[in-house]
Length: 144
Length: 358
Image 1 (cartoon, rainbow over the protein chains, first blue to last red):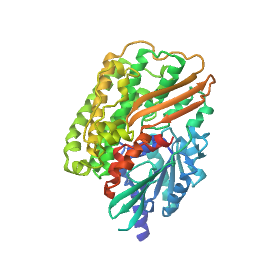
Image 2: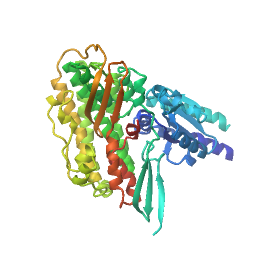
Image 3: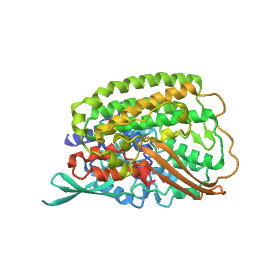
Image 4: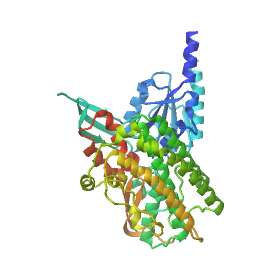
């Protein structure tokens, strides 16, 4: 019964951590727009938290460069298991338009394992919500 | 009294972007601030050696997603001036309309985030709800919400028909009513005034001396707005720069709030005066020479330096963004303030780190 309680509360209130990892702000404001009344992911019990130790979902936007790869890895390691990483936007997937720039390492998956990829430049709030829901289905499989 | 060093960022709930400040604190009072930048540096200026000057429009739009139209507009103005291209008048008015829509959504975004920085979450939600209407206008007229990609060298890519114009005007009326309804809460509420009045004061002399731009400078009583230079079609529109004299966080909030309403007025004026005709001209040849192009971004004056030597790639592209000019303002305002006021003061300059570091 206790296991079931934990499982239910994990699924009904996944808290998310958002990190801007060198994006142009386009995807970041779309992530924030998801939390506001028109899209409102809080109806799924999702809350944006600032502390990685409280988070279940990790939303990463933007390319990785040599300076913020350390921060990204740090945040990922501080999150408790099980955790789901959602990479958002073309730059988060592969580097996007900045792929050839000298300071860009590439997509988020070069540093940490990524579970869900959300394409788009910038990704629309609908796509981000879809990505989060897909991530939660995977989370469900990991938890059980 | 012992000193403590507290890191602010790079991942901080108040600021979606990675700005890192090392705050030296004695008790609760900040005594020294050292900024650390470079978390978002991608090296966009160097990309001009790989991409040709038409493709660079898309790259400079991604300097900053919040004001992409204005970046592209500044770049296109520079190239057009260099190559001697005369942009059709209708394209100039369309540029004004889209750039003012972007200024509106950027200011609404900031007003929301600023309310969130002192914990007024209801106000944050209200402003973002209004902002979605502006995003709807962007989406239905250009096909994308944030990075709209309407500017090209020689004009604009898309046109507005009369149906769209009348629909936008009705939506603007709703937006204006909703914003005005929040005016009382934003400017007279006890919580808001308590957290913003007298916080982070920058005198007129200081603000001018350290070279701040945009609403930070205008909030301190200096009349300076690059739009008065009359680029695009601003020379045919009637407006006065919005100026407040107190120089604190409250004055900056008032400047941005009034500018949002001013943008609505400017869009209306542009829509009533818009001429018929072509929306872009064909571009022949390659740019040669050097040029400095300036426009007013939501955060202040944006400056592009472009140098080309007759190749399809540019020789040098240098971008000076408004937040870069406003960072000294944070360093001047923070010492002497309480630690709990730091997020409010940092947000009051509307930092755009992705612009600054490119």
